[in-house]
Length: 269
Image 1 (cartoon, rainbow, N blue to C red):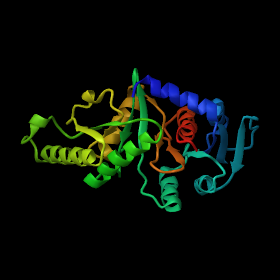
Image 2: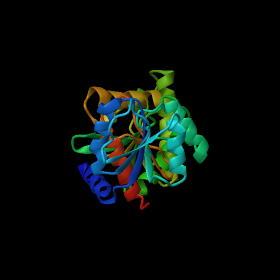
Image 3: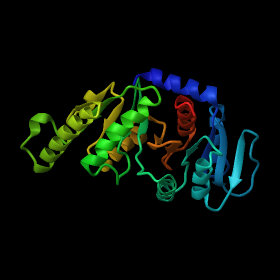
Image 4: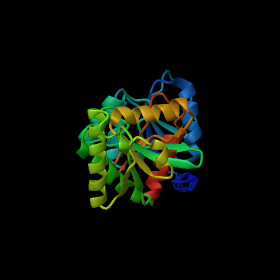
């Protein structure tokens, strides 16, 4: 995806200004100020407890609760918010509650932006993508999710080596064989998918990159966002309604709130 996708996303968010809930657990005035910056993209409802009482600006709504994970997911399930962002809540608690309430297997696509190119990356959870079927679902369902927001996805499948590295390592051989199979099965399902070996640099311009497993996907994400300065917008869960996961390592939640509001608009909700 070129930078035009991000422009369309921002226009969609500003035009819709969806009602977006975000989980908060501490953080105080500094966190609230950062969240308030995103009010140009959404009507924001903070769910949880940002800390000791202080003035909440008119641009924000606060629902104080001792169980923000449950409250946030319940608001989403009841349709009282258009979409949700995890914020700085525990991933374990939120994802378990999300999976139970909506009866889904949690699969996430992380949106990253580099100069002149943005793309979705999966798997990004360390416990995701361990099997061929897991990664196939990420490729096929992920492409379907992107189509629902107007992106006819080109999908890159990564493995542990170059194609000519076959025979150097049993582990690498296995990843090469799995990625070849995965790409073929994805194409059989109607997805434009190519196995690109370990050459992530050849993926430039594609819309969805599927890593060999969740550990390597998480390392790619952390290297790009936390070390190399790529812009991260959070990771939408492949589901309906809109839920965007967000790392607690973030200093600002502008990106995830913008993405959540845009997805609501682009999916026509």
